[in-house]
Length: 446
Image (cartoon, rainbow, N blue to C red; front, side, top):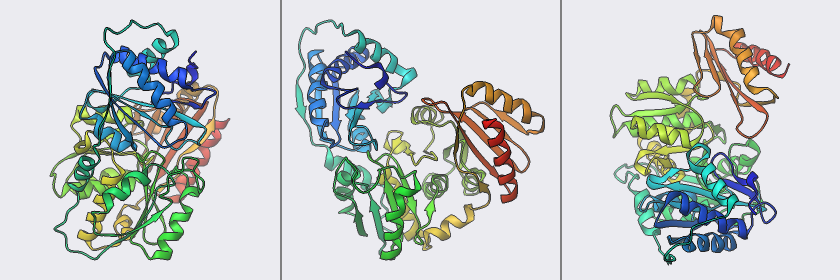
């Protein structure tokens, strides 16, 4: 039996073994191979206690269905993507930053294109739940492959060794997640003073949740950056595909500002390139990138949508407010290591502190993302459009609703999994931001 609730919008995730067990993993392995008709699959795993057992069952399902498995061993998400790009399909056994009792699977098809709710996940779920498969004429084999040196070399291509600047001190907090597996391997060849924080891998996350989007999870890093008089800090999530930066004063750098700074750095070697930013980002991101010679387009939230738009538009880089930073030169996938290396290049080259580099982006006042429980999400969004469209300069349905006005804008979008509406709002004055934030929250929660 396979519990249908473990199939999410972007991955499979559930409590082990109550919701996701070895029997389910076996059937999911067979379903994946049946759906993709693939002959080879890259499979890696994080270091959760349940990962080895799920890996065995998953890969048995694949080989029974006739596919060969390329076992890359332990990995984080960027390393998994790098390896998958060399083949046609991949699965990572991981539950990202979720607590230790969870586990799951992340799927990719040819070109590291993610498999999600509208791109094959429903088909895999249907096949796994049904549990009826055509027997393969020949079973597949499992081959171990070490691709770490190639991965290290790929990341180091982004380091500008010609820049002569001061030796930087950096604090990196991997939160006891899988970043502690790859970051030390890459950074041993980078000329910086690296201060490791919570590098010991323990997927019970004993020090804090490995989710840098929550401010309480970066407090230790903020204190350590100030104590060490470091140039900046980096907070990494559980599977290493999201990061947040902390400046030398210990202040949190929002991911949309990091997007703008990294875009500026990339523009030094990629003139007139196109950059994507998610629709929750500050007006300042578009303005700043275009001031530095880049082109911009807005994108909706969610890695599957962003990666698809990057390919379609041939974008060089994209940034999401959640800390996902995507690089064309890394097969249109996230890389926290490349983002950190580009930040090193920037500080050495600009000879300015991170807070000084961020300062020009602090032009407006943002509400941050605020969640409200709403039963009729679509009805409420229609109601808001009717109330505000008369005065709006533009109305967009790219992701939920986004309305722009002379001195402010707001976006309201629904959660995929919960009865929630998420509000983001920005204004040219703090007073206007607070006034419209409070008015919208009252209307949403009415």
